[in-house]
Image 1: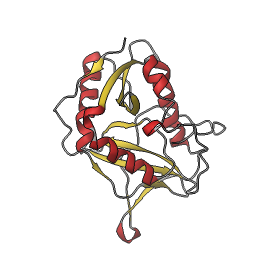
Image 2: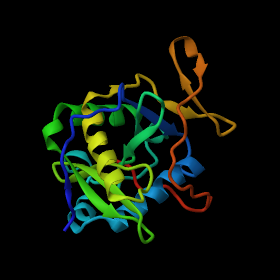
Image 3: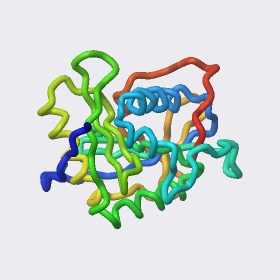
Image 4: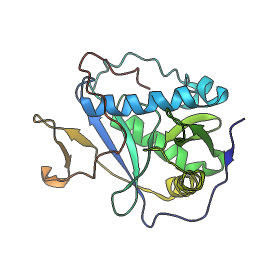
Length: 210
């Protein structure tokens, strides 16, 4: 049985949530996110694995990714030094849907809980955060010790409800680099990339979005 992670009051300073949107589901960064998440799903408990089939509010997570906006995206929870604390479990069909879901999660912190999972190799460990038993956030890397995993999971649970959300998403540019657009269409450097293992197979299509 998976251990439940209690919510810890310790935070990460000024956490924030950033959003990354992709014009193509063949983007290697998007594939890296999918690859890392697939390892967590395969290692998670039966309950988390079953609820992974549902999107927010029971919406099916298997929706045609070719949407009106033509974009797919996810969100990341970052500490004040740009270190990644966690990342979304779900893939979203638009920036507005992603931001609205994070707002809903922040409004119901009592529904958040954490589940410990085993990693893909012996001695590696991870965690998944759920809301009303549906997975919504994962770790961004594997941990070697149970204490490090517990501290990271508790910190993520405490940071998400208080995190500040970006008003605009990062988007992939023509060169494959990511730019964040602010007022006046000025481009600024985005946060540090995720730490998870990357998948660069161009033939793998992105998993269905919510």
